[in-house]
Image (cartoon, rainbow, N blue to C red; front, side, top):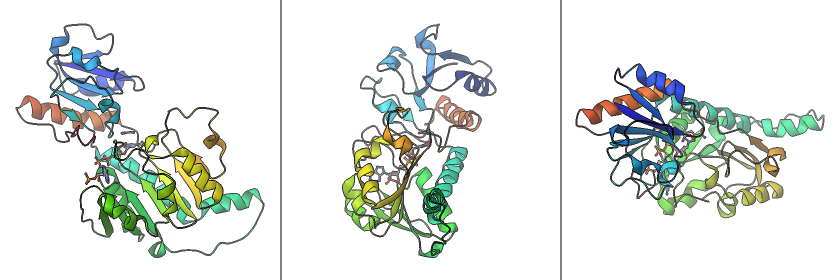
Length: 310
Ligand code: NAP
Ligand code: GLV
């Protein structure tokens, strides 16, 4: 069975080994030096493939994303028609994202951003504590990742609310949906976490107006995509003091250019797109399961809707 691997950033070798453990007849081809007859290729594992590259494989049965997001696949305006695109849903990916979100929510909840500034000024001053039950956290996006983070935060006793496109019911989480529900969702959110997919509808959603709808002193954590955030608006909101801190894992472009002022902004923590890194062993097992389903005449489990963009 021929599988094409195409990624500028991921090492193909661990994937080759992980898939070879499941398929004795594996013919693993790495784009662009993939050799052999393109007509043999049944499945593609990709991250940001070259525009039009996948059209050269006439018998593709599915395109698997190497991560949860699929905007890096859908930006290709020359995709082969009718081939399902499958996003990655993997319990390890979800656990790692939950850890990242918990770590930074707790950082802001326990005023570490303020103590850091006080330390720089050699200032010994205890700030009035706020208990989790009085802290309002909001999650933009209640999918695989957002829902898990929301539930974990609710489990720690936070007041949690979440926002999605369609209505949800999650124990311990106040759920809001649709464009009409966004304003009510934002009201009173002191720590805002973005876990949306990047689509035409969500691009630039975290702009000056959205940040202004948060209470003064709110903090923002972006673990989704750089394109969700209007960076200039965030910098302005930090400068005015309305936003007290931001933790950013994702940027446009990536890597964040060395000259970008976000690197040295005192109110900003930068991480290099590591909130949840695909772990090839568990991810390959999910992809193998879907390949088996497709070869048995079924469907992959997490096929995206190109019209929605996720
Ligand atoms: P998902 O399961 O597809 O969930 C997406 C959520 O966003 C859903 O709740 C969806 O609403 C909501 N949504 C989409 N468009 C919306 C809109 N216009 N208005 C309101 N809500 C909207 O995705 P996921 O697996 O949780 O992943 C989310 C994103 O995290 C990925 O797309 C990726 O960009 C990012 N990510 C980042 C990292 C990292 O390391 N930084 C790692 C993994 C993933 P419905 O439920 O109603 O459909
Ligand atoms: C990482 O950013 C992913 O989409 O999994």
